[in-house]
Length: 79
Image 1 (tube, rainbow, N blue to C red):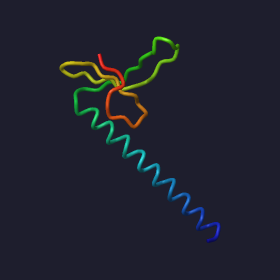
Image 2 (cartoon, rainbow, N blue to C red):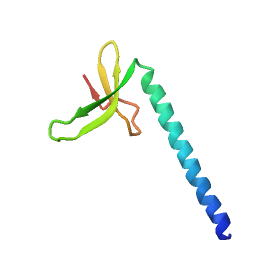
Image 3 (tube, rainbow, N blue to C red):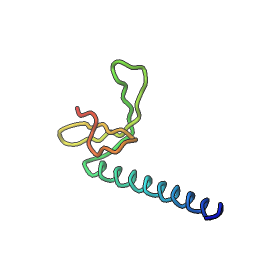
């Protein structure tokens, strides 16, 4: 394989990875939103000074917080 073909393969793999990531983020967001209305919200852990951006979902029984970035479909915090 020449350098041009190698470059095309690398660019193709990177574009495919980007497409898969965008699709996963979209599907995750849709699944999280199925449970109720969503808003952006941040929380701060008790021990640290940093705020973490996330999604807040209000349901009939609870307020759920989901991290913006991550593979989990379940809430990280529930009140």
